[in-house]
Length: 61
Image 1 (cartoon, rainbow, N blue to C red):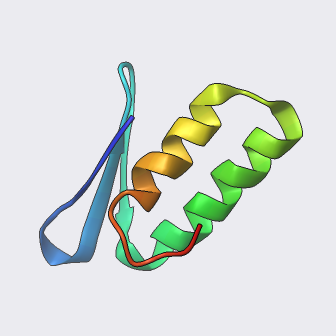
Image 2 (cartoon, one colour):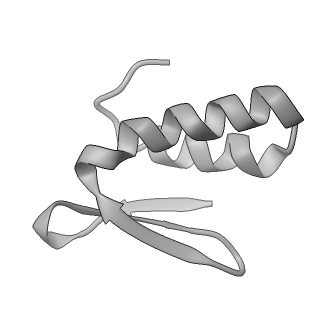
Image 3 (cartoon, rainbow, N blue to C red):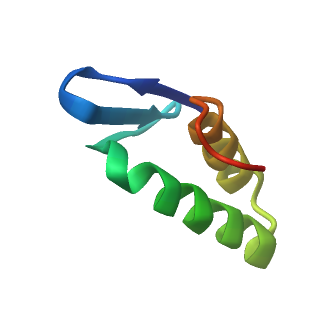
């Protein structure tokens, strides 16, 4: 998974087969969502998504 900041306050999260863009204000809620999904289901892709978003900085954990 790869996360990057785009122009106009957007964030892009992309994997091998899909990508999504959303506002920076949604980044922390998406991290929480992916962390919960990983905790609930154990799928490593959820952890990779959360870690990629977290790697952009400005958040805890």
